[in-house]
Image 1 (cartoon, one colour):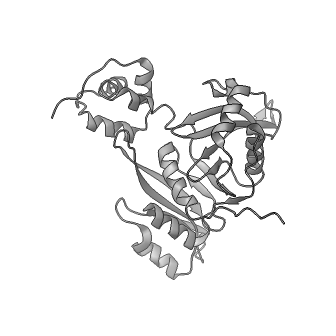
Image 2: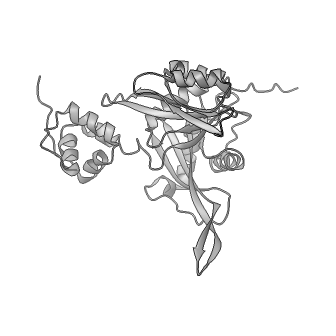
Length: 317
């Protein structure tokens, strides 16, 4: 077997490899046979990058967006949705600064989302919004004072099938973001349906579609002075057959949240990522694990939206 070709790399390429999650970087280290004597992170990144194709290293740029993870909701719309490519091209002509690394950095004055940046990556579009819609209490000058907090939100437009992914809490925040995206793109998505995976049945259907492993659960207990209890699976098996899980079910404890782990193979370098998600069974609220890659999220998205038919456009009378 021939040795990987060694090439000259740029500082930006070294940074992309160094900033990968540890599990991904270690997979690449095994792939290129990183010598055990190399221990410093910068030298590891250099050795790996020099032996990886330039286009593969470049693809890591927006693969793990900073701050990924948290609440996710996918929406499907009547028909196949608008022609997003046309709307994005028009937006780029109007606001070219939104498509730069620095973004627009709008001055935030309230809860209405303001467009900051647009990222195009592997066929989908990430729209970043800022909003001053939070509050915290700080201690200053021997007193407690309320202070407004700014947040960054992401809305992702994906095709095949068309869906809008809102990475924010439920309720008014999501509604404001959906309205902001349509206003900025100057399109109307039409009637929507939220792809909420509700109850044990919905959770089981997604697990079957994704091939995920049931790894943790939060119960509301029936007594004993403890209101809730969490159970985690071991590293190889799922909770379905775990004695402690079955005992809680037998005792009548109510499942509140289920957690799952699933694999996603990265086609560019062969890495198999193990990402996680949690489902609140009562309302279907989804939480995606921190540092999940965009490819793992797309894998999850495909399986979630496949469980829901798009709304049917009402016929004109």
